[in-house]
Image 1 (spheres, rainbow, N blue to C red):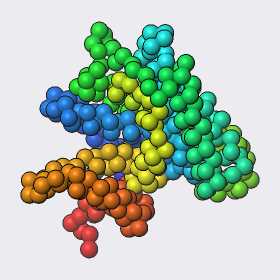
Image 2 (image 1 turned 180 degrees about the horizontal axis):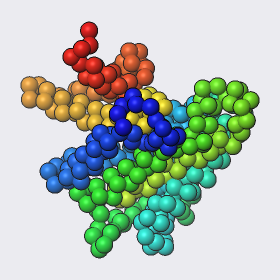
Image 3 (image 1 turned 30 degrees about the vertical axis):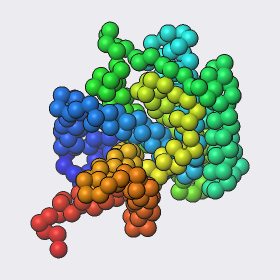
Length: 347
């Protein structure tokens, strides 16, 4: 089937990969991901693991904010719920890590449904404030429910193991976090081929019209919060396993702002935007750090002097995207594809 050719069935029109070329590129991507650990050093594997965790969290927030139009600044707190659940189960029950990750995601889903109740009455800025309140409540619980969270001292957690191999280093943990990320992205992409996903988009575009068409707004808004929190819980559980310890400072409000910025920079309402936003927000600070280290070759105390500048430059990049490319990195990629699709006949 060629691009632009008519589809003969609804299944063909809704297919995730519509052409053999797309299937081929997907196969190339999987092969590249499988071969990457054999050519990369531990530092780059560490960055890929961190990017993967952030992409999962950003994807969940994009489902809620980008596709459903519900603003949330509590994603990091939901990650904390998943992380603490995984840590408690690992330390007290010794259950397998897949069970722990799933349980952490389910518990985070329940908390997300509760935190999403204000969305039934308010939206926009007021909903964002409500989710900030939920974030502070959860952070208070993390600090003071010492019998479960161990308070400000935090919790240590043993690394997961598979087939007798401890996944404690980036080169082994990679084989857990990257496949999970691919699966979570595929699930999210398929979600918007279903009635539920289309209802989310209708609520985002015009909630009153969606209600007139028979869409149950309270049900689908809460469902969107639950799915977003599920992804956050999965990301939080992987975060706990990856770093080996967690404490309340691991999931501050600033991290929720970081994830929301990744959604905006990557492209709201786009799975590609979730990937690009997670990569950008994770790697740009590292690239800026390299720039400061390079300048340190020519000036003394460059790190001490320029570290605040790195934060300013990072903020200016985000503001630049908001001003000059509000549709994010995903739109830039689409423009590049359109250009080469027409090249050399483009005028």
